Length: 257
Ligand code: A2P
View 1 (cartoon, rainbow, N blue to C red):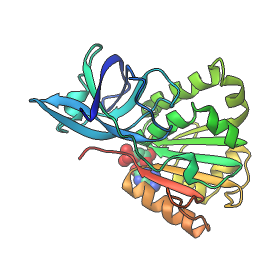
View 2 (cartoon, rainbow, N blue to C red; view 1 turned 120 degrees about the horizontal axis):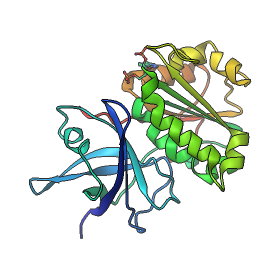
View 3 (cartoon, helix red, strand yellow; view 1 turned 90 degrees about the vertical axis):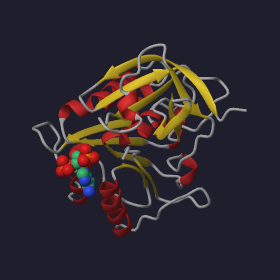
View 4 (cartoon, rainbow, N blue to C red; view 1 turned 90 degrees about the horizontal axis):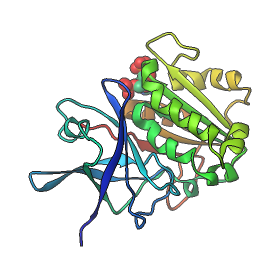
């Protein structure tokens, strides 16, 4: 039996020279938890060429959605960026990942901190009604170099706020904080700096980070993860995993080498 589902591409959108998103059909038997990732790819010269990608779609959605960088010499993304409607995408049958609610202790505020394509798992999590059942506030922070790179996240948040079923709850509970580091914008600065100075909380009218009430999910580049991991540990937060829930969980954004 194959390890992959063969899905059909239903739409593709290019956001910048380096970022695009795409949707595919979803075989109903493909079950996952919002926030997880799986191997996806293309058949190249008869063999599957695969990389890990987080699902941006929530577990209840009919389509699968992915958010990707384009690396000109990257074995997979140099090909994937030319995907068009009707193409076939291989989707691994075994989703995995640590950015799931059961790896966190109960809390009141959930911080989703992502840079670049590290937004992807959080796109799924903010579309999942379970997130709103568990928390009073959900704070989505997306850090990018330039404003254009925020586009996919902005669109996702707009859709959630307008959603027929989730919109009202999301309007009450979801706080979205896009920030850029290399251009003028209404919010600027790295996520690390925004947390260290508590500017994030001041801007959003929240209390400073507190391990009694706050839970954190991190997804981004290795440097960002390392710095935020250290910051959280210094703040008394403990990392959770599948065997023991904690105050925060980490996943690297899957950047193709
Ligand atoms: P900066 O422009 O100051 O490097 P990248 O595209 O390199 O992955 O970066 C995405 C975003 O993450 C950028 O805004 C970048 O800021 C920021 N960033 C890079 N390294 C770190 C880090 N160690 N901690 C927090 N943010 C970071």
